[in-house]
Length: 404
Image (cartoon, rainbow, N blue to C red; front, side, top):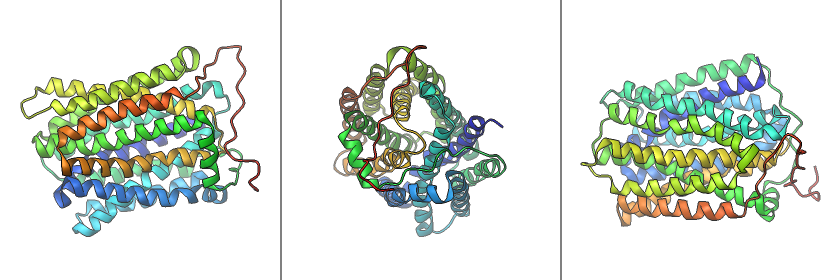
């Protein structure tokens, strides 16, 4: 099987397990700890990820990204199976934190494997967005499955079991298929890599933009379901199809956006547009009440994901044009923005809920996303290709003074 096809299929099932739990983990934890406590558990999972990420490049060099992906997927399946058994609260809290911690580490291995299979940087935007689209199909299907599984109840154990089962095809596929892993990662200290990235204005900007995007990605699936289901009382059979419709922009927009950025527009224009739409529509959720018509709520949800889809496509394509599979440390620093967002977003959200309300939280965070996302974009360098243009030289984010 073509390596890219293997990775796209693998990304679908890896994403499916994550999206089957991301919408329910907030309401599930809220039944145990309340909304503020739910956010803190997510942050604890992010801390675990941040502690493990610096070890990843060395582990990849020794074991290979494919073997690590299989091992992490197996551990994740076990954790989710424990949650499906309705454990006591203390065990459930630990397992949720672990489940949130492991998922970004699996995604990191897939990043390296896909980068090893990408030979032409002029195709990066399309390859990355096609890869992301596979995950976005899972993102569309998962809320529908959640609505069917819960069916007006709060049997979250069934959703956890479905998430565990979804990892089985992932593990089997990676066990039987061969994948190129490229040249061994370059060895350097992660801190030194981060410092070098911070000295490159373009890499610093795209990392900052990814950080803003990740904050949204951890605010939206945590607090929107809690607000709509727990506070406003909307049932899961309604929320399931609404969340599914809301993520359609991820499926329809990202690949065309990657193509337009590669060939015509560059990344910056589409990225600014995405951040503004995402931030303002997220702020607009502050207007939603129990009497707000469903079409209006759905329109706001679709707009938030439209902006997020444009932003994600541009950030992914821009960053991975600049690196190769050997830059495992650089990818690691970039991907640490995800647990960083998972750490920061719930803490800020919890503080805004303690001292304010959901409306205040939506407005403050929505405007912050629009403003800081736009500011990060201004420092980025546009990259586009035409048929005669040579591939630009990659920027080295590891200082030459670091010994192998």
